[in-house]
Image 1 (tube, rainbow, N blue to C red):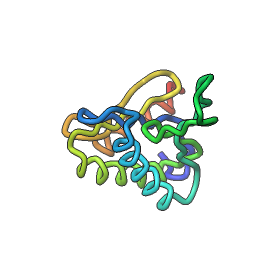
Image 2 (cartoon, rainbow, N blue to C red):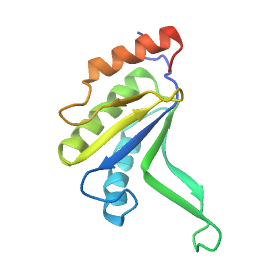
Image 3 (cartoon, rainbow, N blue to C red):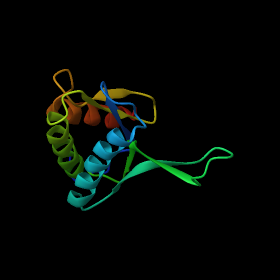
Length: 133
């Protein structure tokens, strides 16, 4: 697959075995990953999930760094993002990073049980050929 081919949008779901998804601690950890990705990609975007607060809540918009939305990335840029995620997750042994595609497919890319970069790239290639992502 060519390195400049754009891949479909996907979500990165950042999970922790030791912290609540919305805790201040976990959101800071996820924000660290978000900042590292944004400093290192030259194309496309990776943004935190935002949603409107419920009635009666003080915040108008809630930003959730434990769900990142990726779009407009080429395969080359995705490889960079993958490497950043691997380093981040190596330093957070209880963290799990899962890619979620528009069709609902999930691929874990962190930790011992996660897919390797070549496996994920191969899955991307097969999915794009069959239009299944």
